[in-house]
Image (cartoon, rainbow, N blue to C red; front, side, top):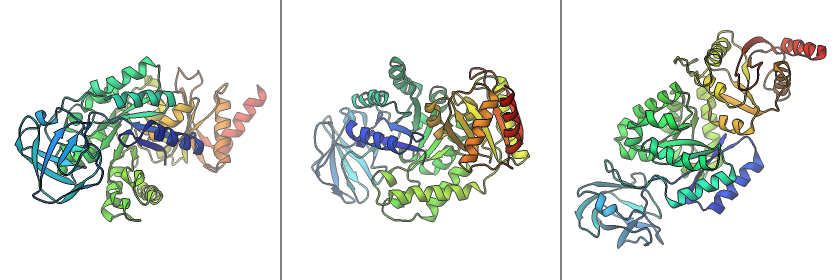
Length: 450
């Protein structure tokens, strides 16, 4: 795994801190992504699951301080009754239970269940086509953003993003504290899809959260919408994550369904940056097996995907660097090089190369440990921290020696090196293509002379 995600809808600050501490004990390369709860509506807590049968009637009220029961289901949004029209469909727990509003007054909604199910504590409620006047950040969200800043996490995934203003609400808090945390926009409603372009202008990356998205729009539109979002993210070099129910059956079973394997493959063939597990590892019976299964399927599918993704060149730092990064990926493919070796301060040139989705791994040596973790989300990138080098000769020697030591390359392998001679602010300034042994010998001669 490359990134650990914490879902704050189901965690306290103390629980989140414990997970973060454990991750950092294991590795300083694994990125930490924390979800905000966002402008979502959930049921309140209940002492025991509420069993519902097709045709049952249930009263619903908006009061975050009341406990839900079979007599009355409470939700965390006080204006819920006023905002939901008569005859609206209500979808509970990612659509597992469907209800319809058959009666409405100033105090409550009377709803009829349309299938058998159960309602547990703090489950999501979706009302397709209804836009609620919820603030982008709740008090709990703001507390968690402050917590993320204190813990110096890598990403905040903001839930139910509707427009750029939702991203800016989080960014304003980060800016006040000079925080370098990057924001991932969770696209899980129609408004988020409709306003994707302006969201991409403000967010570092995107998560396609298919659970709620599949409820907010007709499910048959999800595959096409998923591909559209991936394509737009690649075009502007924004990392994109496909999430929710990828191995849903492994919550209760030790092996996946064939359809789930195909779902993972489809996301990879669509050239997503990352694939994510949710309930499978949050509360499932087989968390380790789920991660291992996803990794194994991904490795196998990678063998049969297409080579370079044909997309326009994008300038993230300067035109020279943009041209060289594209050339490096094309050259590595054309001459069947073993890998691309690059240095980076900010990760921009690395993300630019990752956008072309080449088949050759990108070994990125970063002068900033935070950049290493940020690149954990980027396609085909294997990042490591490296101390600032005096010149490109020292960088090449140290980088290749490290890769040899880790058995990632061999002396006879052909590699493409892309680096800079004039400091991190100048960006990439040259490409060199040679066998590892020759590169090391030449650079050692230069070092000895100087």
